[in-house]
Length: 192
Image (cartoon, rainbow, N blue to C red; front, top):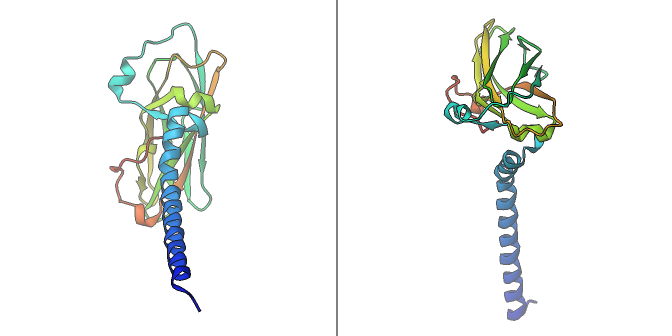
């Protein structure tokens, strides 16, 4: 048989546990945006920056060096798409905007929507690698049998450490979840 002080203590404990549970949920919910901000600031996990063309034009090119940028393309299992870079690598000067072309094709008979996820290696190069235009900024709908060319415009910051001579830009296409498919490439994805 509970006494009033014991019942009050139990009620206080329940309220405290519910508060702790709510705080844990809020913390877990905020981890993804916090992680994305952390990756953008530090350049870890291969996340790249995104620059407006006007910002990129302000960078002063480093004419004294060239960097090799290699391209790797993948399609997640289950997405019947072909995806490739039209060139396997380019030599670029830091501070110069460069455009390369990729091609994607849908082997299925129905329209599918994909989202490309980029990554840059080595990780420490990611903070110096920015895109001004990329198909990875939005979902890409492809009708059955459709093929299309997709440009990527990027720039490497001249402050890229001197020991980095090769940067690899990798993309993997995933099928967009049905509830997020908007049927157009107009929506912006998170910074990549």
